[in-house]
Image (spheres, rainbow, N blue to C red):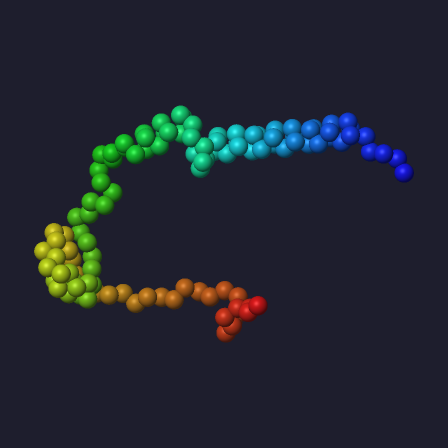
Length: 112
């Protein structure tokens, strides 16, 4: 049996490690281009996060002129002393329609 040369083994393992590092760095660069990456703090990402946190919209998205609630909810708000919230309007409750069920009829699915 012949001996394994240590120089060639080192050369291959070194090349393999270099390829792994290059592949992972390429992978990270693609992720950074798509958006913020968890665990990596780049100055550009920090500035973007601060810009998003400091943003104040012109008009609030939760500002509503009319809040539709059913009688039961209105009674609960009255019990809590919050029935005088401006914009509360009582409406009739609507029937809930069950979503369609896909798969086998009558079965709850496979059990393993």
